[in-house]
Image (tube, rainbow, N blue to C red; front, side, top):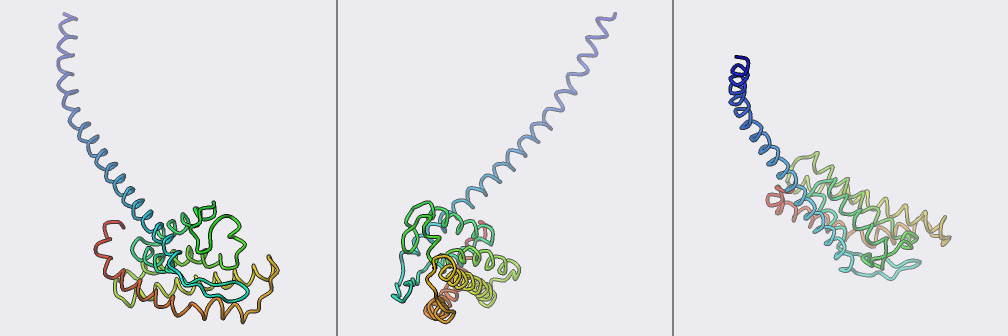
Length: 224
């Protein structure tokens, strides 16, 4: 009698165990789909980030050299690609693009306008490269807060990045020249060499970046 009761109890348990299996399988499938979607988004972000990092590097070689003293200045298209990355990818991703570019250049790959390597930190114009990182963050943040694709809003975000980039570049140039490498320059020289000579061109880049981003934003929305 006892054996028969145990056998009947086992038979009752088997259907209930089998009924639980579909629920577990469905949960696993949903988790798999969520993980796949997250992985796909990560791949798209990495691809877009790598693409804009490469564009920033290429922009360093599209330049106009200005032979002024004590250090020559270079007007490049890098700022255009930094702004475009900020407007299309957002603050965080654009900031990481610039940091990646700086890291690659500082380890020795000659992707800066005048070469590369850790010694580049002692060039007074390196402040503008640091300013690219700040400009990417500020431009992207302002654009995200404005939540508008109008040319006016995009241009306002770019102008904020423009201001931060020039403040960083001018301060670094003055401080490094006077207190680190001991090649004294006056505030007037810094203003002329680091602002007046290139500001007009960079303002034009702000407008072009705003115009380009306005056209590309609908197509790049899936990367955000």
